[in-house]
Image 1 (cartoon, helix red, strand yellow):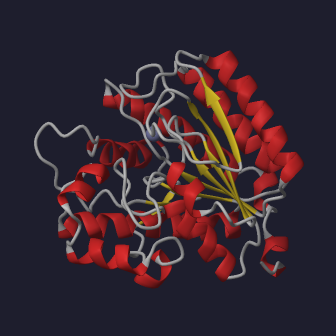
Image 2 (cartoon, helix red, strand yellow):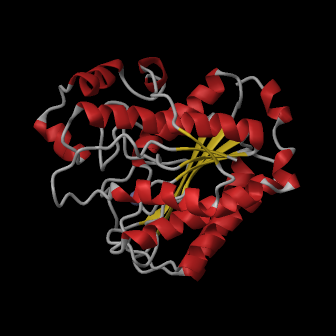
Length: 313
Ligand SMILES: [Zn+2]
C-alpha cells in the first residue's frame, strides 16, 4: 500500500496555537515503526490548474502571493506564510496521489488532508484548499473515475465540500457530524446526518449504517474519498461526541467493508483530530491506517480496480 506524507513541510505557527502540527510527524513515525511495509512517498505540490478544479483563480492567486486580508487569515485560522502555501499544496498533492493509488491498488492513504472547510473562494477552520474536491474532480478529468463519493466522517460538517459541489451530481457528499459543532452555519450536503452532543458508539454506528444505506440507494461511486477524522473520539477537545477507540475502529471497518463489498477503491485522508492527548489522536488515525493496510493486502481489494479505468465521466 502506498501512503503519502507532507509533515516535512512545516506550517509555522505562533506558540500555543491549537492546531496539532505534531500529530503528522508522530503519525508517520508510527507507520515507519509499526507498518514498515507501507510504501511512503512525498507528494508533489498541487498545481494552480489542479487547485482550480475546486477554487477560484483569484483565491488561488491571493493565497499564493500572500494577499489574504487579516479577516480572511482569522477565518482560516493560520497566519499566512510561504511555508503555509507549500504545505497546503503538498497536502492536496497527497490526496491526489492517494486517489490515483486507490484506483490502481484498491486503497491509498494521505497521512494528512481532509481539509473540508475550504470553500471555492476562501479558507476556513484550518483548511486552505479542499483536497478531496480537487482530487475527486481530477480523477474525473483524468478519466480514472466517473462518480466519486466523499464519505466525510470528521466530526465537523464538510461545509466547504458541500458548497463547492452543490450543483455537481457526479460527486456525492455524505457528512456525518455533530450538530452543535463548528461550522455553525451548515451547508447542504447530498446527505447530512447530524448527531446530538454526547452521542456514543451505538448511536453513531447506527447512524453510519443508515447513511451508507442511503448512499447505496442514491449513488454508485467508482471511487470513495474517505475523510476519517479522529475528532469524534471521546478524548477530543473540539468533537462533542463520545466514541471509543473500539467504536472508531468499527466505524472504519464498516466503511471499508461497504467499499469492499461493492469493489469500490478507497482513498483515505486523516482530516481532524484535536485530542487533549495528541498521542490518542494519533492512535485513532493509526487504527485507520492499520485497517487500510490490512485491506490492501487482502485478495478482495487487489482485484478491485481494472474496470474503473474505462469509465467516462
Ligand atoms: Zn474536524
